[in-house]
Image 1 (tube, each protein chain N blue to C red):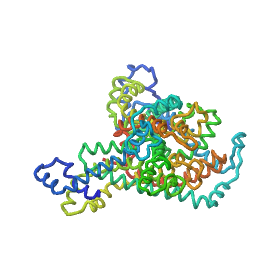
Image 2 (cartoon, rainbow over the protein chains, first blue to last red):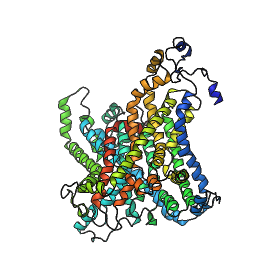
Image 3 (tube, each protein chain N blue to C red):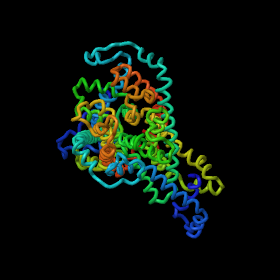
Image 4 (tube, rainbow over the protein chains, first blue to last red):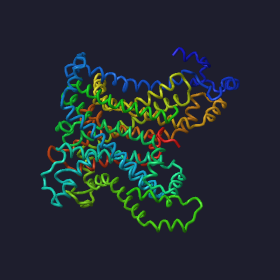
Length: 335
Length: 300
């Protein structure tokens, strides 16, 4: 803070509330104005303005981030919660997790393959929709954009319940159609118990909720590409497929990078959509992903240390992806 | 399919040295394009809107639970909504959710606006570090913080409290709100600020009279986002709220699930009630929101 006070103009605080607004302003401006910078301020003011945000972010985001790491190094259970004591066990939780075949055969494949499928489908579908909307006239483009906005806006919780209802084994839409066609016997199939069909439904849910973001973002990018480029390529006989890869894709590379990385981060940590599906809240261990596993270990089993270690593992994966994201973003924007 | 569709941007660009006859001819020459577009828009609308339609039509269906594959509801009734609000105690959850969301919006608007002004209107040491910090915390996986925040709130006796939930949501809404508002604040011409000082205004007066009215649209847009964050949030509400009198709507919704049977009419009616405000806000500010979300990704 000391070096801040040393900044020029530190002695005057013109913004004190209730200061006499008329006195002394006339001689001040010429003396205090510097090119490209606003002079009328104290060097402390930005920190005063930032203080509430920094306190909130520090106490509620950064400190818990430190805390989850320290918790992951402890055998922290209900007894420790009650007494408030620490119970250090070093890296034992990590050793337990990484040595557990459950992680490698169930949780990690569920997390990674599910995220991968969701990201690929979301980005491909979103891009296709954006390209399609870009060919439409103003009215129909507006209609299409509004429709996908609706898909985007439906909250994850209620959206998930609708998909559960649609795939309900007893009276759901899909079961009824298949029964009508004679494909399945009534009441014999439950898609939520099988790992693959469970995740197929979850993928449909997440892609449906996620593609509008990609579509709207890519569409915004598409509208910035000069029409002449495409027309020139067309004159040269380039097909639409080739024009996409030779013109659109390179120009929009940063846009694609951002939507892909953001989708990856979001899809790795999907929780609500899995937890709310039948069996996802603890009943069916075959369908857990990292987020759900961490939650169940902590709040159903009371093993907060173990749950924290899983959460740290998830965070590290996301951190890696985030670093890529930051590099992409900073290349594009001057702060 | 989309490749043939992309081929015909002539329709979208009637400008330029217009030769209507030729445009017409190109259009006539490719009847497949317009058919493809019609099919495309129908498919897009059906896919996008179907879940929302299924939700609402099940909510007004008097025989929702045995609906099966009936595309249209058997009739129109508001009984499900009445049952949910009256008997389900959902009205109470709605009140809780509204309180939490409103608190989050008010607090985050002020705190974020102050911070946004600091980083976009002042040049100070560590300014860049602050921006990086704000961007970084936006990437913190909130799901990983459930355990420490649960313990923290437990120590502060803020579990089972709407205030505790509001404080946590404030932290979740802040990074995005600051990041978005920063663009809006930077867009206000510095000359306006300087003119106010020349007229003898103090910094505080300039802030309230010049800056706040001019960035109001940005505040509205970020408020909508904060509202949606708080209104939709699930894990923390699930973890923090243990008494049903404190439930917010996402948690209250679980009450309608029985052991073996589910009253789908009621669940869908409650879901519709939760979805509606988000839908309205979201579509209203779609432009601001999407440009904010993608700020930095699209140059243009």
